[in-house]
Length: 122
Image 1 (cartoon, rainbow, N blue to C red):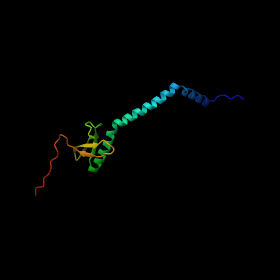
Image 2 (tube, rainbow, N blue to C red):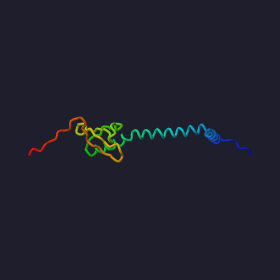
Image 3 (cartoon, rainbow, N blue to C red):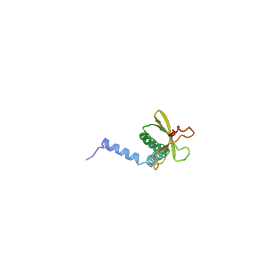
Image 4 (cartoon, rainbow, N blue to C red):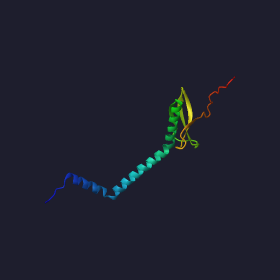
């Protein structure tokens, strides 16, 4: 009895033949490794921004403020990323932690003038 090849058998044979070539296997492995490396690089590049954004949103939620945005990187290597939020119509400059072990923000006025302090005159 003679069996004739079906369409599924010929497709499987073509795929097996295609994948048996070492150049195709090397190209697939190289592509997967390149995508993995690009993903790790991207995560590493944006890590400080992601963590600072989490801290900014948490600070804004507790202060009843509206989060604006954070810088991409820690520009002066002090472990904090510059962020800003809108609180009662004023932009509040923040420094938010760039480490997963230091999530949170502190208000910073930098070279800008600090808000006036009310003195108790009693």
